[in-house]
Length: 509
Image 1: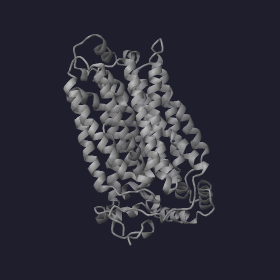
Image 2 (image 1 turned 60 degrees about the vertical axis):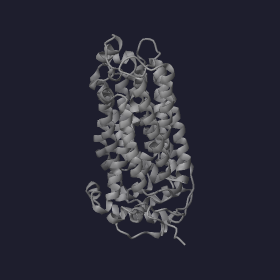
Image 3 (image 1 turned 45 degrees about the horizontal axis):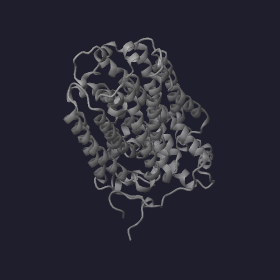
Image 4 (image 1 turned 90 degrees about the vertical axis):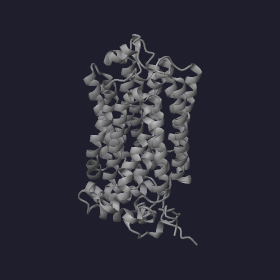
């Protein structure tokens, strides 16, 4: 038998090909990634714009402009400012728990529709905001949209795609996240130059564009066969949809596996209680550990606050926004590379390479800033651009690994009976630590200074070891058979038993 990591063979694959409907469905669904990325990127940009700070956060503006003697690392430390950024993630955390029931009972499309409509409302409130309360209220609606979208969209893509293409298809979602952040940074760079100081309104309201795509797509696209069987038990409709998305009439093997998974899931009345059972221990651990580690890479330090971080080290307002655009270009490029190699090289290899790359650059950045950036003054222009290059290397490592894989792997490891609950836990943990880091980062930067990079570097070392020892390889394994991998794993087999479905492995000769 294959080694304990559970290396899959080519057996157990389903009939089918990449059809236009699958590509269209995945691309439209991934507009949810655009929304997530845009909301991540736009907040850091507008909070570095003087007119926005002057209107909503005057104390921060005065500290910047009135020559008050304060540490470089503490200029932007404001609980109100971080509340604007992190309120979205607190809202997303709460809504993701409700999204589990909606996704399971009403289908993946229903949750996607709620996500699109909520973001439309939130972007309208943000763009029209006249006071801080209206601004934060708009962010709460955006959080509801992200909670429902991030819960349902990765599942939708994983269930629509063939096993051998599932990695690449799912990374479309994270590519959308990267492109969304990039677009947000470009729009921030342009709107910052608008006379009259109202450019931030355009930045905040433009989230309505990908939200409109997602809303329309949720109305016209089919739900997944898995969802149709689970919520309606409509076998004929599920079979028709399966034939359309696979481009063949010979789908009986896959349909049989879906029916088997559905029959098991229908015996589960409370999936959150079910996932606590011993046999689901590996899925439960991964549901919490992967999103936790993804946030502890420190990526949101860069994504939320890149423009602020670059202003901290001495770049001007426009230069800091342009620098944020540059680093996102690197991230998007590396995410595309990950899309093309993830189903060939596997998930574990990319986790390892990305982790080593991120660790090396974080330690280097921390050492560089410790040596050269004090509490007052700034880095030389040349030194500031060296930091920019190092951050580009760091973020390219994230784009190869934890960025796309942090969403892909959780979406493909849960059996149907706990799938909605598992994904909700993943999203809730992700949003909780987004909120925690978003709410505390500026205070951490103020107190830890350049040591913040060593802090996150230590976590990157730990998570890389965790992946090496505890995550089996899932490439090319049908989604309804991934649970067999845990039974072969050296550690997890003690929890889930040792009966293995040989149909997904090659026998060692």
